Amino acid sequence: MRDDLDQVEATFLGTPLAGLPIGHGPSGTVLVADVDPDRLHEIWQAADALVPVTGRRPVMVTDDFDDTLTIRPEPEQGPSESELRAFAEAAASSEPWLTYRHHSEDHQVDEDEIEFYARGTTGVDLTALASDVVLPTPLPVLERMLYDRLLTDADLHAQVLGKVRLVTQTDYWYAPDSVLLMLLPTSDVRGSAYWVDFYGALDLEDQQRLGEVLEQWRHRWDARLVASWGTMLQFQVGRRPTPGDEAWAAAGQLKALAPNLELSRWEVAVALPAGDAWFVHNRP
Image (cartoon, rainbow, N blue to C red; front, side, top):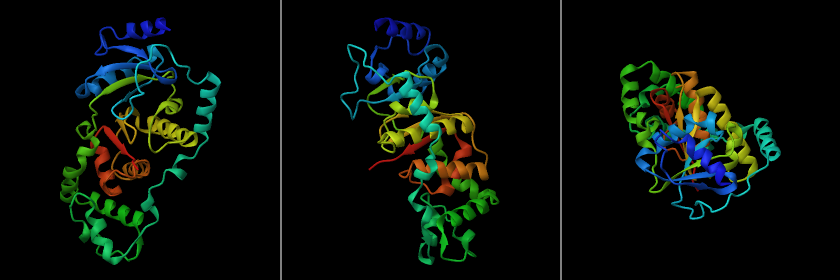
């Protein structure tokens, strides 16, 4: 209905969204086109501030890889209220961290691997911190020990932080050539996963688990989904984990959802308290 579009468009007045082309999107969504990729976070923030008025949660999407993601001349039916409610209820009862689990969790580190894992991916050598480790040992145990000992060495921690902090800043985010703003026909965080295109959630049950992840992260860290590029998700984070147990737990969940994020868990744990942007990468 054009009236619906007019109402949404009216809320854009006086914001960075004003004047952008608007139309019907897939499955009950509204699409806003011609978003400047260099301003995607600013545009998203403006749309997020309008959720109490529009009732629509925003997420940035791209048609770079999907030419069917385009403005439609007529609205397309989305899920009914009962369907969306059932989706959110199933999400709330799911156990996402039983499914989202990093493949390295069960790895046993042998003597010939200790240097590899103690260097992570940034090249800062923590091998000396692991000199007394009895091998073989589970990788999560080794990484937690490295992280705890790193927290007690200010100089070494600063070296690692200097290498990894970029991954929790928007400068690290992917920006496609073509960006659209998708306004979802719900303000519910769990339910919003129904429309999220993510390689790590290809079927309905995984979408529901992703919905619970979105809800948990929103509740715990005020993490809000900014963009979904198919194999990548980008989040704005309002409450940073503190160093120690909080950062370690958050890093484990981030690595579980993002198996292609090329940092060790101890590196992610160092980075998370130093930035407000999370990056998830899960690809074939």
